[in-house]
Image (cartoon, rainbow over all chains, first blue to last red; front, top):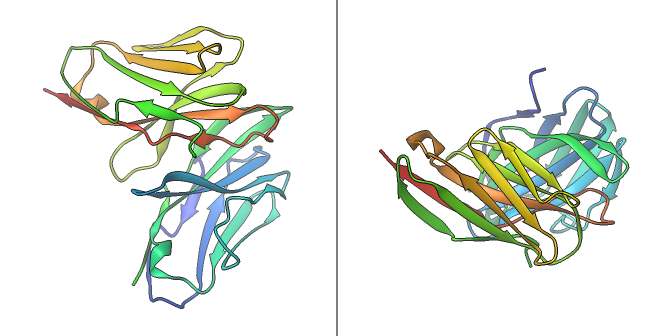
Length: 116
Length: 112
């Protein structure tokens, strides 16, 4: 398996533009997580899906952020409009959930977003 | 506030020495995990210890968990320069649907 695949690896955009980050989880995994990492705030969980359904989006910073998981093999995180403070590395992770336990928790390589 | 808090924030040792990092957390957990992140890269899962386990080994890694003190430690024995990275503990809090909460990490530097 190629692991969790994120695209793009790097994104530079102007303030006010729409940004879409993409994630392909590991085949067979049923849980997907979006995290954001900054120096100031560390790693923050933004949203978590189980079986393609959003379970917890309490970490989504504001209405400018939205995430979808239309099927088991694809998820997007959209920021519209983007602001300079959104600059961060965004990670996607997937796992196989069984009850309260998660197996094979795997992170993608991340998307480094710079909003100028 | 962060569920997991690592200590120390930074650690610098010589190759061959052991490195110990500690993690404290606040609520009951299903399990606790340790991850490594090399500069500019993604996170790599190192080891998972369940709440009913007290110690676990994987190669040069030894993890302990004390649920009464809500703390864990990661020991890397016979460290190598290639172990230089940031190390994060992450807790899977009980009854929170499986989300992982990360600490701020310990930056380990192993000098050759």
